[in-house]
Image 1: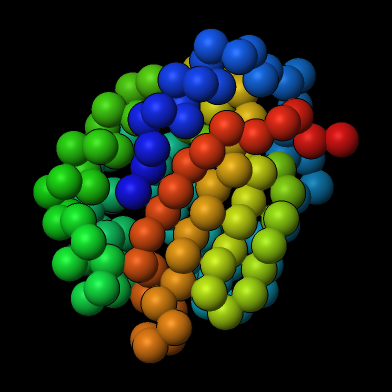
Image 2 (image 1 turned 180 degrees about the horizontal axis):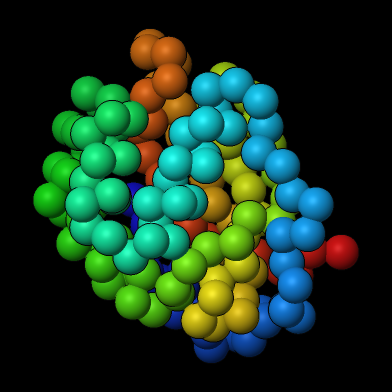
Length: 138
């Protein structure tokens, strides 16, 4: 689940970076890249219906048991209001269980690590999404 405490810490510690993130970025090929693209687009849209559609399409049974779509949508609204759109900058990790990106918030001009945990028992399904403060990429 997206952690608000991490977001507040980023605001308080001033992990801001310069404008222009995302130049030359490419999502990884395959299912994890498709899921990451869908999540970033849904999150950045500000649309409840697109975020709900993302969760209905990609949230695994284990993910649904951890937090309902309604709970995830409530948290999404709160976090999106604070962050605005996300711009992906770099892939940090990409394996069968996790895709991790460095993204930048449009409203805070701050960097975050976006982790998308994949369900090992189901191909192309998400267990959880986590957003934590990150240092400015080099």
